[in-house]
Image 1 (tube, rainbow, N blue to C red):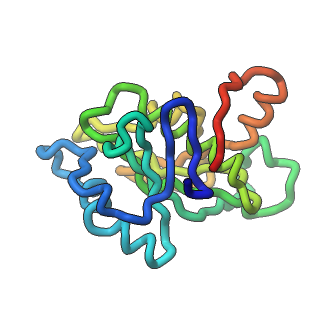
Image 2 (image 1 turned 60 degrees about the vertical axis):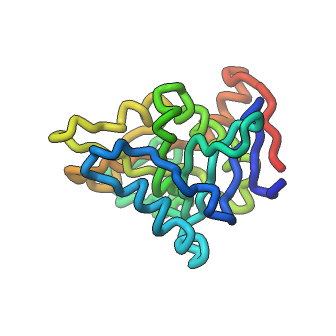
Image 3 (image 1 turned 120 degrees about the vertical axis):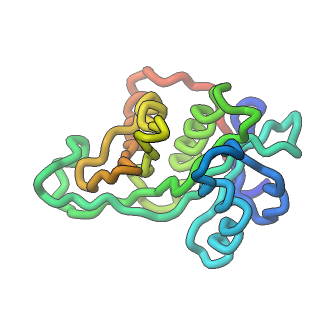
Length: 202
């Protein structure tokens, strides 16, 4: 088992090294004009890995390990505080930059969408960042996709999973920067507010 893998109940997330496992994976309907996620998985994910730009993680069910339920690409990031707007949980620090990990791309296989696998995947990624945090990393960031003309808005999904709008980055017509404070999990656990089902790092 890879050292950066994590198991939770019957599910496992692990980094991809053999990208043939993603052959045929699709998380976007064929009639969607924006095929960025599918194109990235098929054409760019492996090169990003080889060039040390991003690492792709996949979610699988241990009972059916040949099927990829979802994928996420992770890369280093930072939250820069410009002095005008602050994140309350770190307001006591005088630093202008805080370490983060960015979810560059995130998708669930079409066959498994709307079955809470996206929420499960995010939960496991959060646990992995806490358990496998080799250096300081306080936040997870993401650019939530929103396209009004196509009635696409992923912000409610991320908000449901504890993400907030990131005040120090400008929004665009297509994406809204958001962040999750990993320390909120630690604080909730210490207060006994977080369920304690075991998740094991390998």
